[in-house]
Image 1 (cartoon, rainbow, N blue to C red):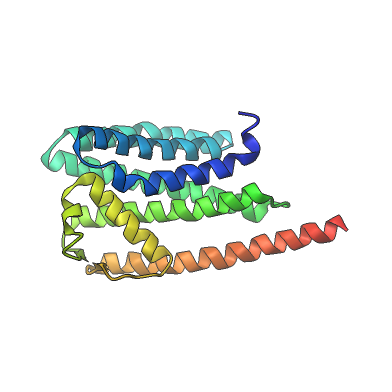
Image 2: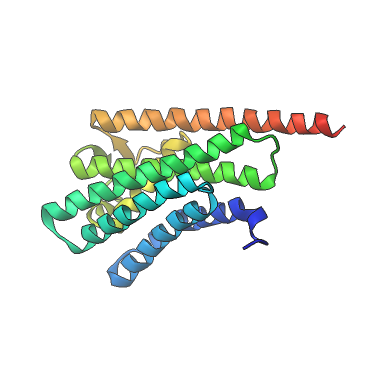
Length: 226
């Protein structure tokens, strides 16, 4: 573990990319569902081990952990209204946990006196984690109002499968975060539209402010080294 510590944010970035990119490959059937859940659990565990250092941060995470796991289990094994309520709790807690992690990453960047390569990887990982958090918000909106989004006919089947639906909204989230906007998923409900423009603004703000902060710290390091 000591040898991996200098590269902890790189490991988090790799875990995040694998967790998001592998989602469409592991849905369907009992084995696919287990693999999908393991990917999600691995991502949350990586966030806990890499991002949350202080005792206070870890206590907050440990309070959320059993609630997240429990709600996810109930949403998978129960049916009807119970499964819906459990899914809403699971996605809501995931949003809070990931938002907290992104906040911790940003706080450390802005209070850091030195920036290395691994800190840059951490900043990128924070950007991706924000996209994952927003994807869970979109799932919540869809679960509450299934007419909140218009989805292209070729993609609509994904709304009927839990794992495929999560990936669909992950895809939509990152397309929105980067302001690419392909138009194959379109927000219709007011709350969905508000979340979309908020994510687009956040994505641009994150990159502009964070890059400016990193450049400023790097220039300060260069001046101090002379």
